[in-house]
Length: 201
Image 1 (cartoon, one colour):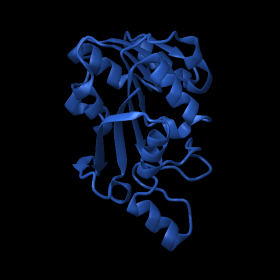
Image 2 (image 1 turned 90 degrees about the horizontal axis):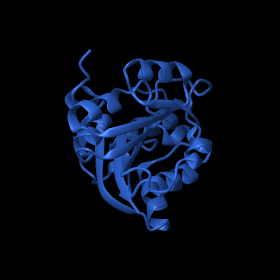
Image 3 (image 1 turned 180 degrees about the vertical axis):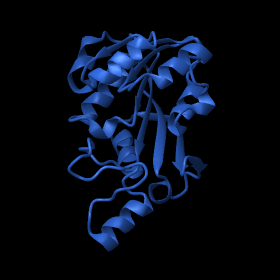
């Protein structure tokens, strides 16, 4: 089966795929079944490694010929040496980690640059759901009920920006998506469903 081209990936993964340097050494943390990795290997000639907590996803990725190991970002990133990669990727995984600040620190220990994408919990639909319904939101990007969701640390665009500023982490670029289409950085905390940041030490 031919790996998906960047245009066939989920919107945040397409952005990441289009901006990973050709032939880079890449670690994809929370790589799922390896869609992004497969695209990067086929279309950007990267040396890709993956870390994934779900055993079934690991098996599916390995069956595709990808180098993926089962592991937990909260504890297993410590096993990698400093600067083992040129780029680290954490897509739609940050909010599921127990200690997101430590995971982010590990990403920037392992690589000088990292892509981080996450659903924005301050999007207006989420706010409206809480305001009018008084219940935890269920949306296209947050499709599970509160008792089923893996999300344990709800993060907003402004929370993430403040975190980076406090730690003097540089934002090289940021992309904001609404309905999988680019939206302006202006009022992104209110308007964007999803954010992608490229950060560096």
